[in-house]
Length: 165
Image (spheres, rainbow, N blue to C red):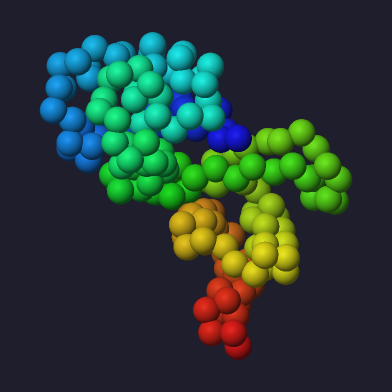
């Protein structure tokens, strides 16, 4: 399930003119008749849909694979939004690894200890973390000036991932 929290965040950050260009929308008059407030309400009732899927289902845009498969965070990243401002992390365990109800947060809102735990467990069990997330975590730690040890630790893991050394 996609986090419902992403909807308001996306709609507050999207540059509509860049989205129109990205999706090559010809009928901009019809496109603009869907106000973000109405879209937000309808989208929250169908929160697992991508934004493009919602607009296709509403007949607001042409039904293309590009629009259907476009993820909101990719749209925002391509528009220059920092990854920590548009990528979410969903947790279903607390710091002691007890199962909890799912909680989704923007990367920028995660605690430093949580970021450390993510790296430790992802590296230990999955062996890899996408560059989008690594960059977001790094940006957060640097902006907090809490990167002294933590960032060194993460850099060591990145080096292990990329070089195997």
